[in-house]
Image 1: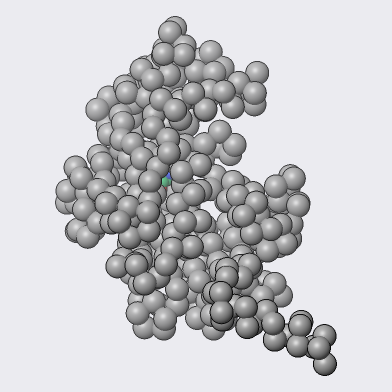
Image 2 (image 1 turned 90 degrees about the horizontal axis):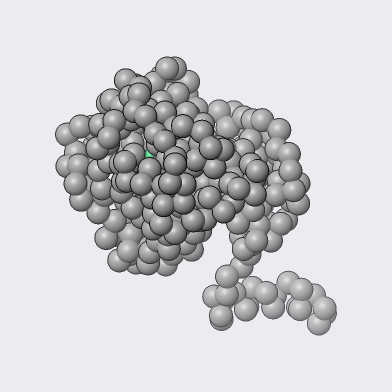
Length: 337
Ligand code: VAH
């Protein structure tokens, strides 16, 4: 009888008394992308390899994926998500499936179907199986009529890209599932994310990653955006911390949920080019603006106000442009040379 008590009752009593963090069981949808590849490793470091299931439509290869459970999931198929949630007793879903801004403009219905199809499926499964859901939004959720400088947390959102439309829809749906069904939905509006591990795929801010690759390879960089095109940016380690911290935040402190402005820096191509030139004095860049990317970038904020995230769950970035540049160059030298 004592054994039964120990294994069945004691953990529940401890949870009640100490409210200690029970280990989460997490499912990552879209783990193969720029964010998901690093999130898989970071979540496993925090919660344990077997507590984090990574999934994607494409095969997931490599140590970071293979050190724990992997599932092949087409997130536009709700039964595939539900099956994984039941199989692994999932209580938290990170839904990263999306087609990025510039690519989505070339195939708007694909952008909508992946972005919204995946989100609706995740929200419905979360409602039925009592899961929390994180879905990233983006500066892309703002449009030309949004104030571009110190963009407020609560302001007009009339994006003119399909990517932005999916992000605003996602924010509204996620808030609806919280208020209507009590689903614990949370989100951040990411700026351009810069990382050295996985190349971004088809975003308007991709230039801020590609410029480092050109510098380290000793190549001239052809910039697809005009001088003076300011956008919010963030180094991937800060983005990873934001995704973990917001899901660990005390819900009683959250005034907002979907979705928090978060940013770390704002620069235009000239500023990041000059930061890199401190390390590569002979590095060259020419401007050849790409119309689709330029139009998208012009519709987005120059700099967001992220005071709500700072006040409600302690958001505080650790990397500025110079520290990011040092770390990017250090790691790309190891990767490329
Ligand atoms: C894009 N990197 O450019 C993504 C991101 C804020 C930009 O959403 O589409």
